[in-house]
Image 1 (cartoon, rainbow, N blue to C red):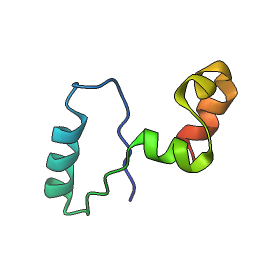
Image 2 (cartoon, one colour):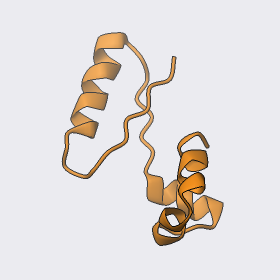
Image 3 (cartoon, helix red, strand yellow):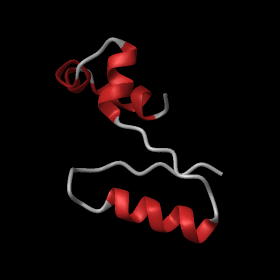
Length: 60
């Protein structure tokens, strides 16, 4: 099972992730969008410029 949480900063994603991992007895794998974008050779402004790329990024 994979669960991904995305959203604005300071909305409790990390806290919720830790609680879910503990409750469901799943490993917590932290991933930051900036790291993934850098590996893809893109920046956040570039990603925002093409809405279709945002959808593809979410499933990468």
